[in-house]
Image (cartoon, rainbow, N blue to C red; front, side, top):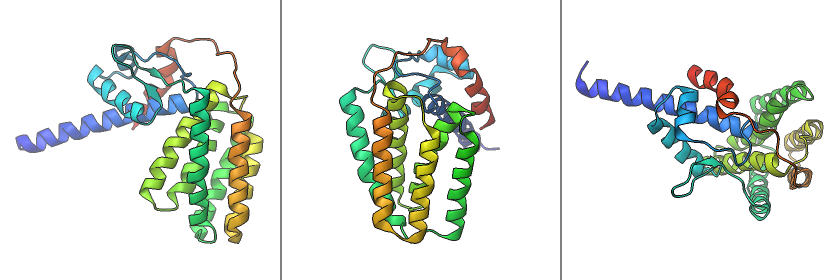
Length: 242
């Protein structure tokens, strides 16, 4: 193997390692295992995943760009804690983005896409009342799945970012997650899309997002603070599997 090939392989391994940690840490935030305001010291995160501080630094920078982590000069990174005004602004932007998704898909879903969406809602129903974190993740994934079906890369990226931020916002301000309501709302949106009823689908999505915002944006007492390594233990296994 040439030096160039060896260098390329090392970079590829390092990239895969960093991506695994990124996906695991992002999931821990979205599933609300890491609450807003949780400190993320590079050494502790690195020990949790068995990676270097350099890898952790790159992952935290990536999550900062997405708005999931906050980093200030001379201060430790922490899970972002958006203000109430920022939270409302995120939901406002999300409503506009997801209206565009609906307009792109109404009457244009393929049979395969319809099956995929219905299978996702079935997974949401199975998680209902059994697995809080899984239910929260699946609820957000429904929206990113819809966006992915538009094949508009910029729209996909923006919807994924605002959906992730909304999960963080609900962890900070929300009432306990109401998966039953969300599942019913998701199914109604799919049905309208399949009928090609764009006006109804747009209305349903907007009402759905308004309902999510209404269920949230309330001040709740924070949950019991747990040790960072304890919180990330299960996510380390997922990062190693990637």
